[in-house]
Image (cartoon, rainbow, N blue to C red; front, side, top):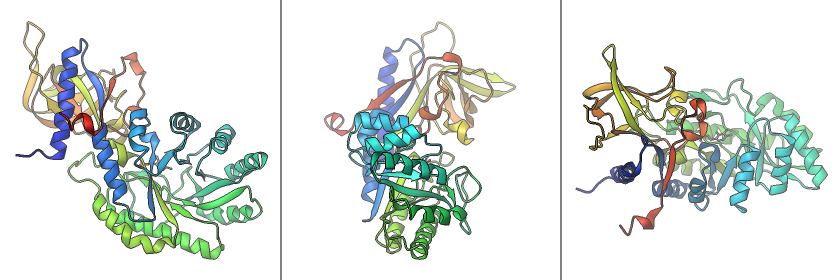
Length: 412
Ligand SMILES: *Cc1c(COP(=O)(O)O)cnc(C)c1O
């Protein structure tokens, strides 16, 4: 029977881990990134977009060079959120179109955005606008700007992580927008290209997200009429497409979403609509693998203690979920005494940190898990290593392995 694409990917990851295990002296702890899976997923996502829609990758989700090298030729550009990300990207990609967003940009960051060349800056407040205009005037250039707006939207379908639609530090509150637009009329150093919205992350409902985009586009249409804005060429609708870690078989229905976008296209009024997605692009390509050091019981509850922890893979703790995982059995056993393990049990998987918060999975059914086996967490390609507090307890960092794109496998 033919293997599904997902099983095939597991097989590759497992084969790589088993090879690595044979060489390892210390317990294995590693991130594995499947670049071919990333390439296929990103290419399919971009291909599904109707004309007039563009996809930028928000690199804060995972800014590793092999990830960016895989994505640069596929996406319309990168979204960056700091001077550090700007320098990192420009060091390796002289030409990739960039969007610079994020709160609290410093003068130095704004200046280097102007000097190194970005396609658009997303401005978060009147004061930031004034500083940017001042820096642009000094340089004799016009800064391409989208105003990030924090909009109250009727019937907004909230998710577990909201950046707008309520009081937050992000964007310009809707009631301050008229003041900013009036100020812009006398400041040609700023070229207003459009508006930016990023009200939420973890969106799992495609229909709700289409309704949200529809509300954005209606709002932009109203502003264009009301303030006779004739320089606009785009609307940035943010990222925020979620990954369902709790019920992995029920992911965001991108195919339906893309169809809905075609229907929404009439609302664009000729503007380009940009997405800047992070999680949805890279989450699926990453795996965090830990070798089981011990299996023990406490008050009848089995605990799997494995090499690594939330200092490498903070995602489950950050999101408050029990992360799905697989056990990869390893037959080799190096000790002359018996091997701890459990069968047909509900286990918690914990790491090596001296805190009860170091839990990656809770109360999860397994057929069998023993010391020396590997536990492997999928959906670990975004906001995983990059959001973790790596040096707490000074354990060694995990290995980072990047399984190459296509041809290497096509030959095999
Ligand atoms: C983090 C962020 C994104 C990406 O969000 P995802 O949920 O990863 O898609 C996009 N835009 C802005 C402004 C962000 O802060």
